[in-house]
Length: 238
View (cartoon, rainbow, N blue to C red):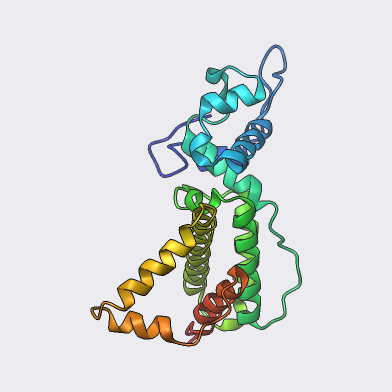
């Protein structure tokens, strides 16, 4: 796999990364493939998080030598791009659109959230992505098609999709971290007590008013829906 000084995934020419087939080697056929390597990396990340994904660990999972992996993924950045694109193939791209771009954009946001909750390492990974693979491009095309009725030009539609993805990634990362923190015994109660004390100290009147206001549904789904609606309904299509 050719490296290049130009832009790409970890210095790898994206045309070769995404367009070239997984070529067989001379001599004995290898017992693994780029697809198998990527699947193993995804499985490790799903089970143990992104930090657990190393070239050595993935090589052990597929029963290969570490050095043999580098012809398929010459660095972790390239492997990360392969992982992102592999799981992006789970996102639906042929579902019918309603023609109401705000409704369809909210549906896309929900799909992204479900997808990221299934793969909790994704919110952090998308920030490191260097290039877009075919599955990622297919979902992007679906989103841009959904935004066509908005009247926004192509550049603005790309920006809206990037804004939506950044929101979903950030919100989902927070959801995952909160869920883990709340598993600690007494953590939620201690945080609530701390906030109550801060609100009562007289130095944070706006926080005190906010905490004293009528509560809203606090389930993760309800919270996400409120935030998603604020984002999408507030978009200016002018």
